[in-house]
Length: 450
Image 1 (spheres, helix red, strand yellow):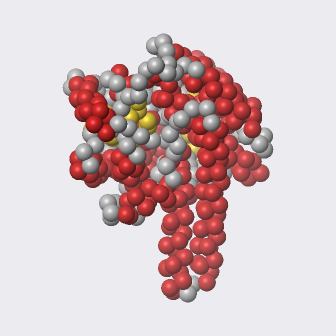
Image 2: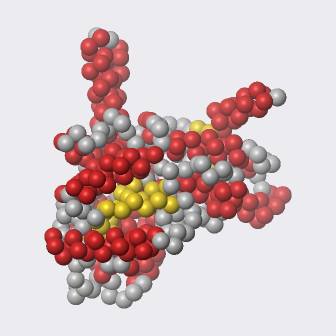
């Protein structure tokens, strides 16, 4: 009996987790980055897919009910999101509820990070509910730099990928606009109100223009928003200590999971900048270029002609993809920076060199630790006044980051703090962040900032 159950489980994972055509389905996107998730949904809608962002964190108790506590915290949050959504849909539609009308979007990564197992575990849990075994889970993987094969029709794939990537970049820019203006707003609450309103405007712009060949309509709307946002700044408010935020991508980006850490830092006098979402996508593409180069060298040594050709084609494909991503990103940031001095994004190749320079860590190891350690070093070099590492409790890559970055920052006399989250509220956390900000302010007084 146990063997039959295991075979059924493996069959469910192989048949109902993957890259499915989502035309005609309701496509459910979990919220990670608040702005970026809605912009991505707008891109899908522009290409004729009924996409929506699910309500988040309200189903946390459901997520905890069907997990053991050993899972990575984002797994618990996203599981709760989909379970609560399906529960409400069943209650709303009654007999008209048809699970086959929904596709749940849960990407994955390769390597040792537990993120690669979320959609498999979600599949197992969904299959324990009546009819929810018919809800398919659409997945993309970092193993092929999030290729869209099977998810989007081939003739639309190129245009869709460009628009989807641009949605991440624009989401990052709007986040950085918020973090730039909120610490210096003329009246309290103006920045939040402005971003909430403009998020709807730019989402509508992506819904309208993403399927067009040119992104000019979207970029023009972005420029108008940036110009308006700059007017919220009170020029009489003096500069504040600059804090760099690194860590695990979901928890550092998901406001409710990290209990709005950036707002807490701002409360104690910071101007904080979180690592971007596009950085991760650029990293996965860069990593494919790096792996293809290694394959070319190995195949040349063994003179395997067929494999040399395949590796060379992969190298050219991902190099070209990375080139186009950087070009899109640079253009969007340049247009925004014409009006306000937001921070540009790191180039992944440069972060790789930062690690190799002193043999600090290696991209050969992989995981987000590569990005977090190198970004912390780069922020220190650029004159930041402190580093915050945000991550899920027990996160392996982030604990690696802590073990390496913390002593490095101490050596450089840069204030540093680890902040882990598991859904609980710790009474000492705010005091720890306040103490960290006191140290950052002392660094600011002594050294200034970039």
